[in-house]
Image 1 (cartoon, helix red, strand yellow):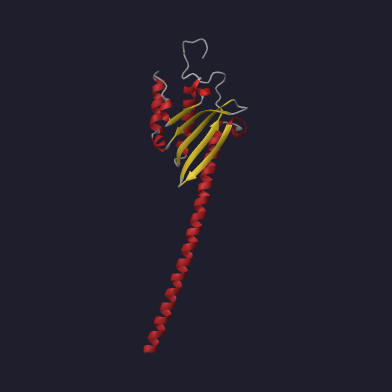
Image 2 (cartoon, rainbow, N blue to C red; image 1 turned 120 degrees about the vertical axis):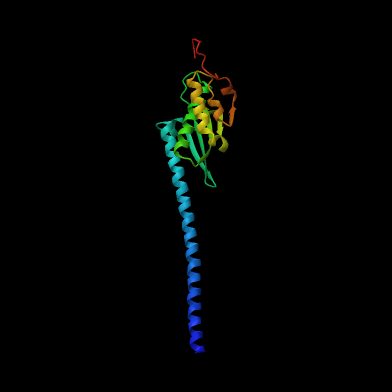
Length: 190
């Protein structure tokens, strides 16, 4: 009887050990597969954001008007955009702020995983000299919806253009410091 009990216990112990080793090996494979899927999902999301940005900034964006890159850190996306604004002969900062604010709002509406924007406004579509840097950090992104619609309301009611308030930081070069802040509606030239 003791012999039968010993054999049964050894069989149960052997089966238990096999299940434990199988579980450990399977768990490692599942974790590797999850890591691979996460990196694929991250790359797919970054590609989707990049393609969307190119489409809203216009035809042939990278060849003529600018550049885009997406940085990913701990599942948080930073969109870096360098572009030449279509402003004609008289660049007006408030119009650039409005344009960039609108584009940021569009991107956030579709891609909530974006946590930061770094815009580089370039001047001269041939040399692409840096004129301004416009930064929207994570806190400003959280407030983007309300700040954007507050600026729209303010403009529609005829008050001062407040799109500038969307940005955490605006860094200007000597070139952009010479640009008009707003259009003077009473002037003969813009």
